[in-house]
Length: 91
Image (cartoon, rainbow, N blue to C red; front, side, top):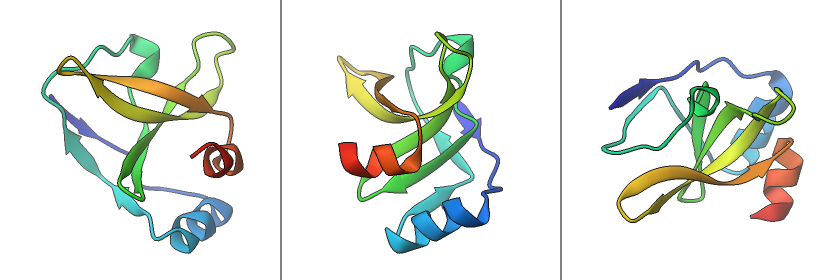
């Protein structure tokens, strides 16, 4: 499945991405996913070899950043962070 992403980021987000040499992704192809309707990524970037996507948290219906992982051949979101600073500390 091919996912296409919004590539608009705030100045603060762009500063973070530039500081960490992140690559903003406009699209990605993932063979098998197990995403719910809430977990479809809206924006995505690569952070030091880790793919990070912006999804909706099902519990509080807010946008969060999540780490893309693969388990038994299926892609899923393995860790969720409220903001980019939390992501930086968590990874």
